[in-house]
Image (cartoon, rainbow, N blue to C red; front, side, top):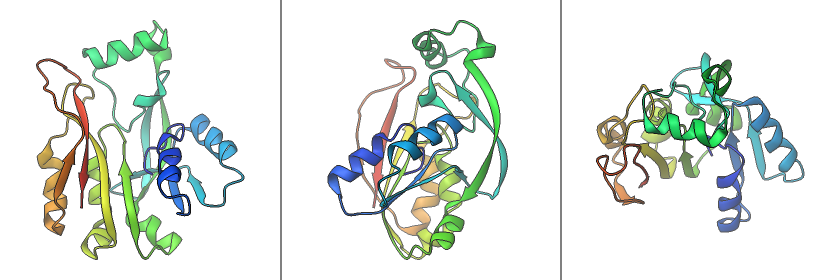
Length: 202
C-alpha cells in the first residue's frame, strides 16, 4: 500500500483479504503517526514511514493542508486542481497551505529484501505523480514475476508540475509483460482539467 494517507486502502484490502499481511507506506509525519495508532493492535498491518521511489535517498516532500495531495512533486499553482484543494482546506495563504519537509525514500526492491518478501499479491500505488519512479525502483520484483497485480492512479489532467502519461507507466511495465486490464473512470481533460483514473495491470 504505497501512499497510505489515512488508511483507506488498508481498510479496503482487509475487507477483501482479511488474513493477508499489508505493508503500508506513508511519509507524512502526522499521517504516519495516526496510522500507527489506528492499526497498533493489528499484527497483519506494518506501517512504514518511507516514500517509495527509484532510489534510496533523502528528498524534498510537499505536504499540504489538504493532505490527500501530498507528493514528492509540487502542485501547479495555476491549475484548478491546486485552487480547488486550497479552497477545500479553507487556507487562503499559500505559505501555510504548502510546506516542504525532508523524507527518506526507498526502492521497493530494497523493501522486499528487508522484509524477505518472496511474492506480492497486489501493489497499490497512489503517490500523486511518482508512480513511474516507483515502478523503476522494483526491477527485481517485476522481472522475477513476484508481483501479481498492480493497481495505480494516473493523473491525466493538470495538477502537478510533473505530468505523467500512459507511456511513462507502460515503458516499464511492458518490459515485464504486464498487461492493462482495467480503467476505472472514463472522461477527458477538456471536461475535467484535473481528470484522473485508476488502472490495473496483471
